[in-house]
Length: 125
Image 1 (spheres, rainbow, N blue to C red):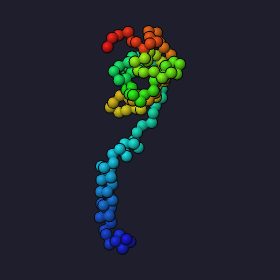
Image 2: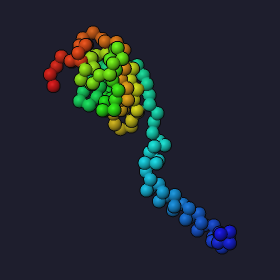
Image 3: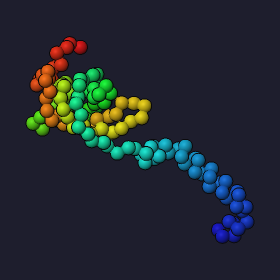
Image 4: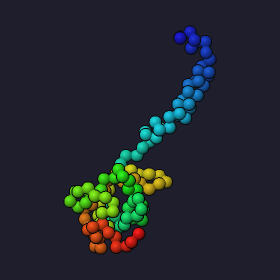
């Protein structure tokens, strides 16, 4: 093997390694995406309203998926339809560029004036 490498021009060897790297990247994009995935962010917010598939916080929609854990004031798991709004909550989410951030956790801290404890917003959709 050492004799082979000595006989091959270094430019050719570099070119082969470079091409192999390009092919690897082209065939394994999820490998690169996983390393670029952002860490979850946690912050205290006021959830103003519920929208289809999410919640509204300071004019921005945060996605709520089937994997999102939503807890009421007592720490009991609830569905999005049962989340009383407006409310103070701690949310944990994955930041996203170009799309709505995805909520991993919504933990209700305090109901605000006008919030229905049953989760109804007072309007019919």
